Image 1 (cartoon, helix red, strand yellow):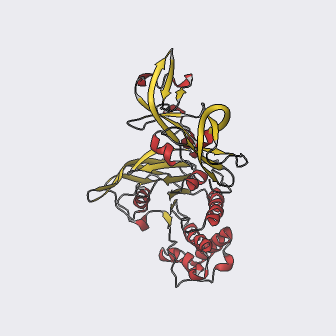
Image 2 (cartoon, one colour; image 1 turned 135 degrees about the horizontal axis):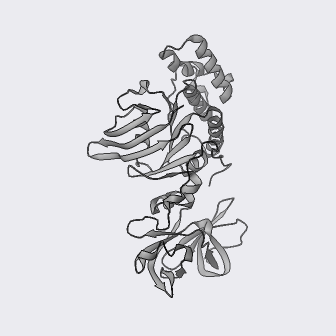
Image 3 (tube, rainbow, N blue to C red; image 1 turned 90 degrees about the vertical axis):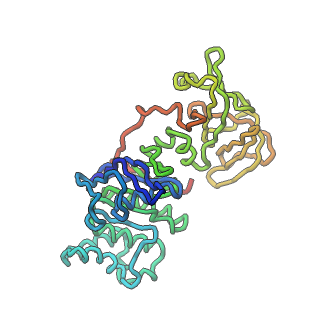
Length: 380
């Protein structure tokens, strides 16, 4: 096993900067997820680590070895692709053996590794089949098996579950977690799916416009976003944002967002001290908007039943918000209800820069690779 260290990594394609000064520490035996929207640079970053692209600037270290000038086959990595990249004319066993044969591994070792991987992935009965005879989930297991038999220092996975249906993705997330628990191989995983990121990673790196916006354990990043982009990207539905003017009166801060005046909890006074009279954005997640008889009066515009929860779109003046409530709550479109924000869970952002004014870097925990995330049983 080995840690992966990226330092000031840059990749340009002509005038386009795909990766812009990325620095990231991937601890040994960790499961690190690069997550972000399409075009954010996450796959290009992974391809740089794999040696499939050459860095314009910066360094890539695997263990103690700087690998910038090494070809892909010279780096002790194994990659699992989105499209599986199986040889259609070869059997499952031949696909799994092929890389080892190309590296001149002895026959008895090849047979042992293939047998162990097949048992681990429960594909022993598939070894004689061709890829065309397999389901999507079975093909994914074969692609994982081909990587496992390499016994690499690092696994690199590029959106390997994106071609599976929703139910199978949930199952395969759980299988990937179990696999990582057993193998403890350092893994860098790319996805645009925040659910995969939250359920798989020991740490996540949220990317946008070629830069890493925030790195940390998934729950911490979700609850303590560094900026508005991270707050907005993580969460479904995404965080509500209400922009207004901050004003101090009688020693307290109030945020006037037009339809309501929000009293800022005293715990945030120091963080907002320099923003009296400035434009500030209040952020509150839908699950932190609760129905209360004596709360803020709103009108229900849309009711979206989603099984384990019901999402309400609420008319709060000229700034609509969403709330996630219990599915048993009797509410219909055009109803008048009252809501309350969980004052302990709100966030405040600079309206111009998007930086979270109440984020404290000293609160950031280190990555604990001994306690991997547990895959959830369903979508969120």
